[in-house]
Image (cartoon, rainbow, N blue to C red):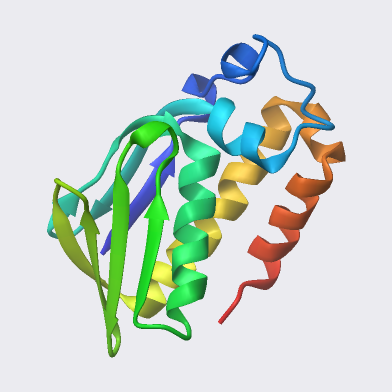
Length: 153
């Protein structure tokens, strides 16, 4: 079982921008994933809880990228923004072990991880675009939306 969610209404926007404000229509992916959209998130597996507070778009993109990489590799990594730790993913057959550096470890089926990561990225992009309409014009966000719709496996 995997549980991925976040609270759109508790997720901040421009307050973490490089100058305190950010033009969401033109911001690059680094600023969007590292400097904006901080809030509480839930990331749980049956046997581990990685929940916390941080940049939710970074988490969504990181998990999506790790799941995509695991489609053709045995290992993947995701380094969370702002030094929040490094997640290590190891795939053995249909099972993926997820471990946070100096933190918990848990397992989940690959197909479940891949679908949850794709769905979570789509939800984060959709909810953030609803809350911050200028994001809809951002080419990076359009690319992420398309990736989440088409998947990778």
